[in-house]
Length: 187
Image 1 (spheres, rainbow, N blue to C red):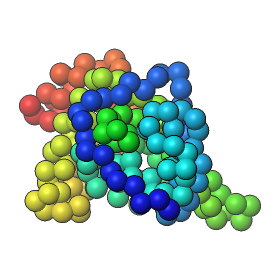
Image 2: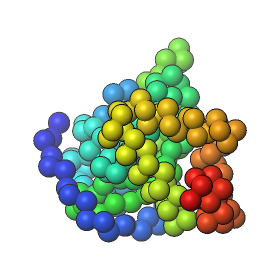
Image 3: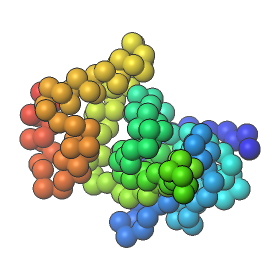
């Protein structure tokens, strides 16, 4: 494992190409086992800097730990999971992805690793998740990770949505963001 310095966020968003997938394979502890060339290109890290290091090195400081905990809770129980993540590139720039995390099992059904496919999200979706994640992050900073998780699921319960439904709805490009935010977050 390399001991890498984490870059300071620049506030500059990298444009992820819509026709390219970012792919990574991790072990059960989140250690990167392999990545595709586009992952290397967009992150700015070399293959040797990424492989055998924790996927956590790419977590942008704006990402609530609550969201990361929800992801791990689900994939460790064998549930395929979609999540919106803000990643930090080596140079401090960032990029947003919807990750579809697939569970890979051996012939006995035991989970052996995770395969994540990343695609870009729309600018409208980015705005929504910037707002939501900032709210959750503020709650975490005051009350802790569990309170961030509780806030998200209380919000989803209030709006009669599952997490999966919320992700799919938020990625729907036909939804007018202003109406969605106004009706869901009372802003």
